[in-house]
Length: 246
Image 1 (cartoon, rainbow, N blue to C red):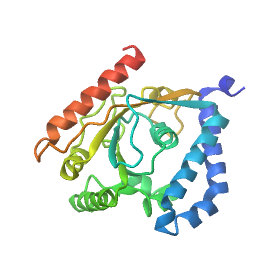
Image 2: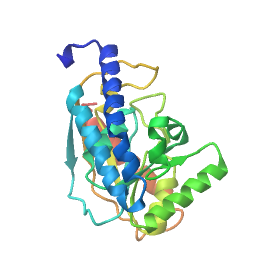
Image 3: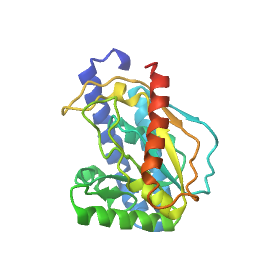
Image 4: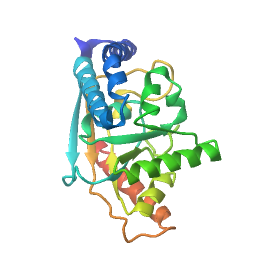
C-alpha cells in the first residue's frame, strides 16, 4: 500500500506522520529536557520517535559496523550529508547518546528548537562569532564525555551524490582532545528523499548506515586536521561508491 503511493504523496504522508508522532511525544520531551541529567532519556525517546516513524512510512534501516564501538568512549561522528533523512537515519540507528552540531537554520524551526536549546548545538557558519560560540559549546560537551555528530560538509551540496569539501572544525576538535573520529557512510538516503524543493519526491525503502573503524587522533597535532579530513573523505567516498555500485 505505502509503496504504491505517488512519490510526492508519500513525502507528504511521511511529514504528516512526522508531525503527528512529535506532537504526541512533545509533553514527554518537555519533561525530559527540563533537566540535564535526563537528556540521555530524551535522546532515547528521539530514537523511538524515529523508529516508529520509519516503521509506519515503510523505511527500514540497517546499521553495519566495521568493528564494534565502545559505548563508554567519546567519539566524533562524521557522516556524509545528501538528504534531510540523514538526521532521522543516524539518530534512529546509532545506539549512543550524542549531540548534533547542525546549521543554525534548523534551530529556527519550532519543532527542533527545544533540542537545540538543550541537547544539540546550532552552528552559524556565516558568523565568526557564531562559529566560535559553537566551537566553545562543542568543546564543553567533549569535556563532559558526550560524543558529537557533525556533518563536515556543512550542509547538503548542489552536486549530490558528490560530497562537498569538508570543513575542518570536527577534525580540529578531535585532535585537540585526542578523541577518535568515526566516519559514517550513508549510501541510500539521497535516493529515499532527494534534496531541493519544498516537497521533494520521496520513496520508502532501505536506509543503510555503514559505521567505519574509529581513527585514533592521540598522536596527531595541530595542523594535521587537513590530512585527517582528507582521509575521512576518501574512506566515506570509497564506501559510498562501493555500496551504490558506482
